[in-house]
View (cartoon, rainbow, N blue to C red):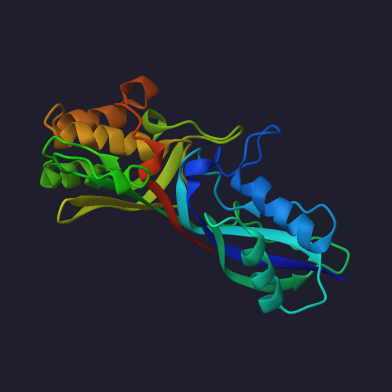
Length: 251
């Protein structure tokens, strides 16, 4: 009998062309997971993910689902997956949550998500740390976190985020942001943002614009005006992908 499995995975996105399957020859998180599942169950498997992270973006709590014929326990499958996956991808949790019984379960990891949480990491020091080169955005200039947090408060609520991203086909650019704040721990700044959904490149565009506030090139009012303009050209640079982490997905 086919079983539907739900799993939470983590990955270092450095070596991958994003989460979603691309053309042959371009490694992605989805294609690597499907390759390993095919190896284990000896038949093609398609997985579905909660978030289509871009090239170089990392995840601590991506959610995926897939259907397979599996006669052993959940722990056996978890061990088999982690034994065959490369070291930059790991399955953290796995459960058989619904017996397919010849028809598809209704749960969808992307469309049924109520909240998604991302973090963006900035290393704010004069000299770069080579060990952090694929983990955070190195910014030499001093950043005013107080001003960045004042600007970030404007993001909270239901509003049009067209300035900061592109929507999927058939949807609009209105989203609800629940949390948007910066936290400093020594030389490391972490931006935490939680929303019901995100536009393509939204978090990285927001971070790039908040960086402009932090270095003094924009005022808080400039940031708010850019947000309210609902004009993609009003965004500052898109922050590098390697500082972004998908932290969790809530249902």
